[in-house]
Length: 132
Image 1 (tube, rainbow, N blue to C red):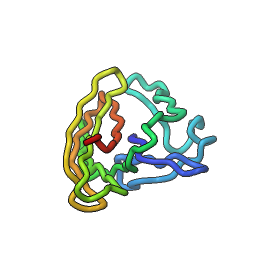
Image 2 (image 1 turned 180 degrees about the vertical axis):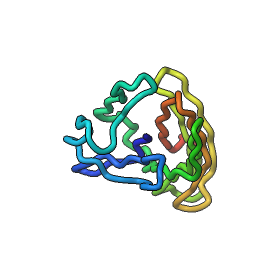
Image 3 (image 1 turned 180 degrees about the horizontal axis):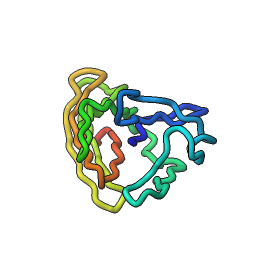
Image 4 (image 1 turned 60 degrees about the horizontal axis):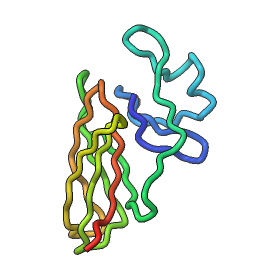
């Protein structure tokens, strides 16, 4: 399952099934009922994310699952609160020290960019304005 967002009371996951995106309350993440994080060895496993440190000027980023397969998810990386005409960099961090970056000039206040995340990968997306 892919965590695609959060609220004050729950994490938003994409179930990779017909249920689509669901909110799972924090206390239920450690339960063996409902949605669980079972790996191929039939044990429970997940990355525990207690917070990301983003630059204070980072633009809001959210993810939309556009296609699901057993090997990968296709995503629309949604960027908001952009300033038209300003240059931004979308950074993709695999949480293992590898960073990929793509720069673009915003033509409107929102933008969608495609991305693929394979089942054995983690990905954190951050969008920051570049200095002139």
